[in-house]
Length: 463
Image (cartoon, rainbow, N blue to C red):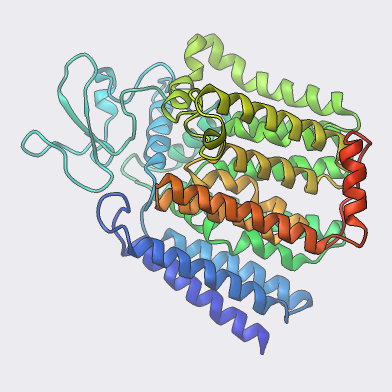
């Protein structure tokens, strides 16, 4: 009976995912109640489907995992992005690259690129103003003319690194410029399915239950952020999974190549490096740096410092330089103190992960490193947690799903006290879950670790 029940739950989840993508308006412009309610229901359905999957075994379970990934991911294609406008920038960057223009050298509001503007990215103004979902108002550079665009920050250069740019250009090369959000959404679906396949393979190799792959395959965050909103972070996650699989098999050169490509996709996957650094760290590091330079040097030679794009401005705008964005740490150490404390905590976590990670089983190290960074940095954007989800699946430590849940709450309810409460609850849940799964005598081992935190690697305890 569990298999039919699981399938029914997945079909209901797919139907609700399609409804949220196709029928609801862009979240930040009108209704601020319906989408959060539907999101909560989707997470409850996700939990119920995982519980039901416990009663399904063998090939039937693997088949249901795959079918659920296809059904929910396919349903997420039903409508345009619902909480983000980033994929409009992806499309523009791809269009200008295919026209022989560097997205680092020209901003979308540059009149020199006026002939490349399409109506869906630059809708005409109405009575001197801009109207419509996802449409923002800017002034054209140099002319001051009112400009309507679905591209956020149209007056600044792109922020995305070269591997991401290559993906944007490849996707837009395959479709006409009139094609809107669907091409990147299809890429997101393909990436999400590829990660599901890699997780099933990695779990099999590690002798773990393949059903854990459902933690990625059915997760509402994947459907929403990898497919509907088509964030390029999914590609970074895919490459980091490949890097970690290669490291677990002692293929250090391949691990470095995949890691370098992942970092050159979104930069943040660099936090996956400490768990991959031992042994033979120099091979991984050399390959990663070589790949990173290989894709960046041509851009630097062409655009110079402009290859950084809007990254410095973005970090300042988001409050990371001032420390305001660290919502937990700014509570303890306002201003610059929060930034310094965040850097110190991340550095300590990196050293401990580097020292403690089992080279043959780096998944737990990845989980801890990425999870700690997300809890310390507390970004407003839940799609950063796409890096964390595969590591949760590989370790089976489902309590860490509280991190993407907390970040989702932070996006849908941009209230700092509520976000702080969500993060505190996530930390408490993770600590309780970790203690409950610990073997007898864990407190004595913890005391030994505190006395000598650099005592060498520890193996992952199978869950």
